[in-house]
Length: 164
Length: 421
Image (cartoon, rainbow over all chains, first blue to last red; front, side, top):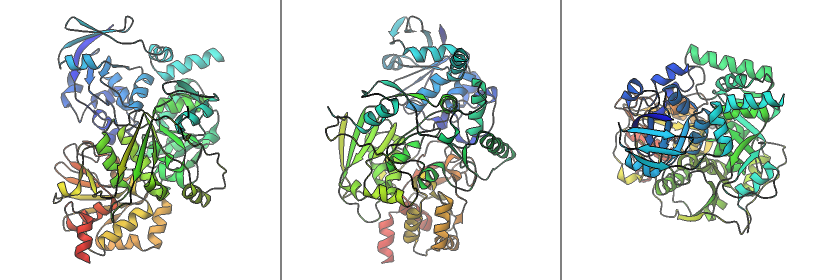
């Protein structure tokens, strides 16, 4: 179960405002990366975000660069999930590969406002907001396994260890 | 029912008879490309528990993003990468060779029928020479190093037909900006985009690269120009490799076919802070600029530098404007030097930089201060992209950039040419 407050933004939230290019090739630990999460979009986010909080976006969330830090900085900041009307494809892959739950639930996005409490029950496949339930289809098997393992790297480590 | 390019090549690379859009397939790419992010990928690779890259001959590493190193931290990053590629025996191009996408094409590392995955969002560029190429993340590149394979979802395909002849000083950059403006930043989300039409049949490879490069800015997974005599002529001068091209079936089924007639297209400008916020130049003409950048993987080729020089026509860079020239590769740099273009730019007051990404991603070599306005031939104008989040960045063709440099304002290059005549 994921539960926290919603941070709502608009369409086309791009990777430059999630994690600016000026930091992309600097070597940075997760705790430091978390401090820059959404820096150019909402400077208050990194200061106030709490574990389990949910980012709510519009269409094409995560468009732009392939930088994986756009996903890992959110994980490091404790974000429980990103719910959007749609995701840019590399961000979508990076999120799953970083162990970050990403869900496309357009109705929920319309209803949720910044500051609202949001609950996500991944086992039952439902998002709960103001008592209303928004079901979402189960994620493909391999995606669930990667998320459960905490990302592609730990997933693969487990797989390759099994083969060895 | 016929198959699209994406459906045919992904079936082939997955070892399947046929695939459908939406299907998840495991593919074995022909080439994996990474750049300054290679040290970070190596760290992830270590966490998988593997010591050796499985098929090192299938990978290439090109340092381009912050080159030469702008700080001790960047220098350490480069040093780690040099050590890693030496240990693993991975093909390597050090700082100064050029922007990764330009180098991959110049070296003939991507071509018709190849499947290329790159840890960079502008990897779709190689569709200009008939490859299927898409961007992936760092963890995925580490996974490729370990196993040689990765899952991909078979995309739906979009056909964009470009018809008509381009007016003078209107370029491939204006065409793709116009298309992105019409379709939107997610107009081709997760799709394979095939470009066809009478304009395409006359379009040189560098122009095709502008279009495939920027297809990423409308969400495309990959972009494709069917290899033709122009493609094979270009490649023959660069590599001895033989290619097995893949073509869409004549009766392929596309999710949509969209036609654009470019005959009356004006130069186009993307306004901050979104690439799909595109207007004809007449709507933003007169806007004052502080810095102009000609270069990057989008428009840093010799044709672009020639066009910029032609539009500048020996006029100096306007007072108070900084003009940066960033050739996309060493090859381009040398050619421009031999043609006298670099000294022309320098004499005009421009600053000629080394091959590389330059200030495109806001890390070094001419970032913008708060309140400043930039105009670049690059591919992104997001908030903070070229430095301060309080700067503004416009995107345009090399002709538009050159006209802005000599007038200090966004100016229709055709008007400038008329005055010169």
